[in-house]
Amino acid sequence: MKKFRALSCFVFALCLVFYAVPRLPFQGISQLATGFSFIWLAFAILVIGSNLFYVIGEDQSGSGKRKRNDFTVVRDRGIIPEGNKQGTRSFFK
Image 1: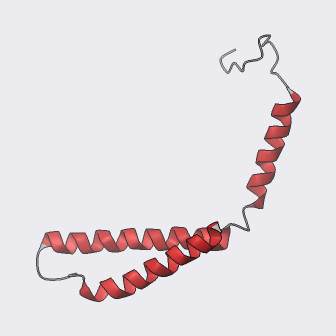
Image 2: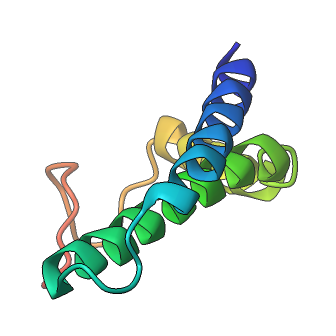
């Protein structure tokens, strides 16, 4: 369901860019309008890139899940660092 949402947001943002780019004033009118056009286009590219990364790159991030599961196993076993008798972690000792 989340992948479908990201894919639909990607398609919508791509359509929005194709519709808006010919209408944006990249030259001429004022520096403020030109600056807005470039900032809007950069933000649109970030939105498109993030949604595309989520749709394509989600299956390749399995190694991060494995590391997180290893940490939860260590945490659930109750391994406590040496010299710490109360069960809280101390990084300064």
